[in-house]
Amino acid sequence: MGLEHRWRLFDMHCHLDRMTNADEVAREAAADGIALFCTTVSPTDTLAAQARFGTMPNIRVGVGLHPWWITDGRCGEIEIEQAAQLAAASRFIGEMGLDFGPRYAANAQRQLDALEAIARACAGHPVEGRVLSIHAVRSAGEALDVFERHGLTAIAHCIFHWFSGTSDQLTRALDAGCFFSVSERMLATKRGREYARQIPLDRLLLETDVPDPLDTPYSAGQIESSLMRALHELARIRGTDEHVLSAHIAKTSSGLFGLQPRPSHQSDNQ
Ligand SMILES: [Zn+2]
Image (cartoon, rainbow, N blue to C red; front, top):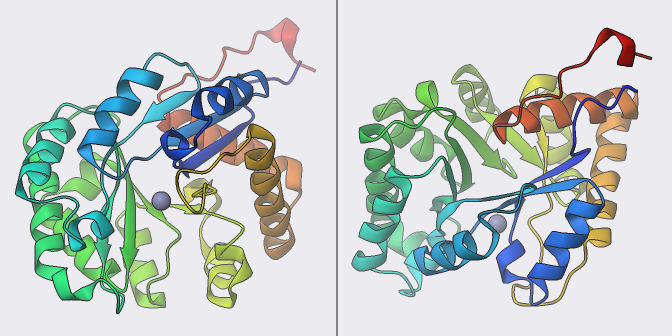
């Protein structure tokens, strides 16, 4: 058989709930063997997505509080508190983090306060196999400071989504045990390709981060195409076999999703 896993492709960071036809995409993805980590951007979205997709076997919903939503005031103190409470009770968390790029840096302290609140809540309420999807623009060091201060890199699986920090920060994140979800857009950049070449195979994941813009229609077929293009490019950059790479990434993702690989019986092999 050789079919070890029910899901052959994992999108480890996408905004399923912000696709206008999300239910259709979720169903199509399941039928096509694609699993999705639905990262959300606010606690209101988190609750809606948990209610909508919480029971679907191919979907995991993350508790989200996106730094852009903090910066522009769409999320304030109430949402920070709400996200921290939801995070304390949840295995899957994201999208959250820091964005110190020119458009968002003015509210760096409020972003740090929010991340601190979520990290503190997670540390105070450990959950087995917790997974965090992290947005860090010009702030990978500060994000790692927060996670390490609360011991989160040791007790949770921290995934940097589209890592764009410095080479030293990549080394630090690797030493801390972090994972990295890579999209075709990251692989379109020189630095992205270089990092994708260096990241050890067992820390490597795929993502799409679609739809862009949010609140537009999408399809499982488009997700699959994007993941396959990223996989193809990764295999090329790393000089490895695409099928071997795909199987390894699916196995890592499956573990993060909390799925046991299907027990392989002797008679099933080959
Ligand atoms: Zn995102």
